[in-house]
Image (cartoon, rainbow, N blue to C red; front, side, top):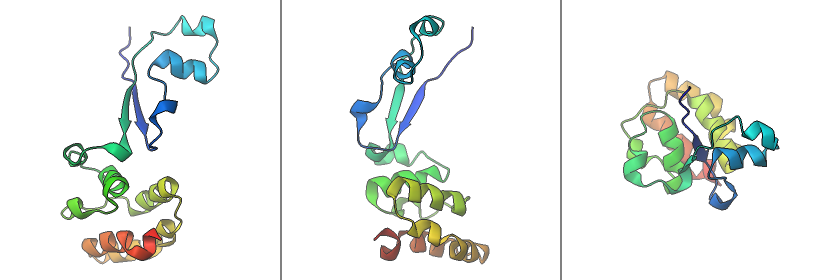
Length: 133
């Protein structure tokens, strides 16, 4: 017996396309019925990142909190005291989720700012109007 935790992180606002059980997910991906009998059907826990309440988002202590706040509020105001650990990865993820390549275009300049110890300037540069147009 092996315990299984089934968590789905949804970055879209389209919750109806996400299956609510492990069997539904496996069927959707083409798993044969006889193979499904070998797997327990588990309820999937779905976290809709674009609809998280602020009190839940504040519990994130990693860079993912910046992404969740940006998607929900359009900025990082509640993360003023938190340091961005992985600027390059954060920028790439922001581009993927927003479709805006201006985040990745700023990676080199943001890394230089961060190396200079000016963390607050990194956050400001990431959320400025030019980065979000």
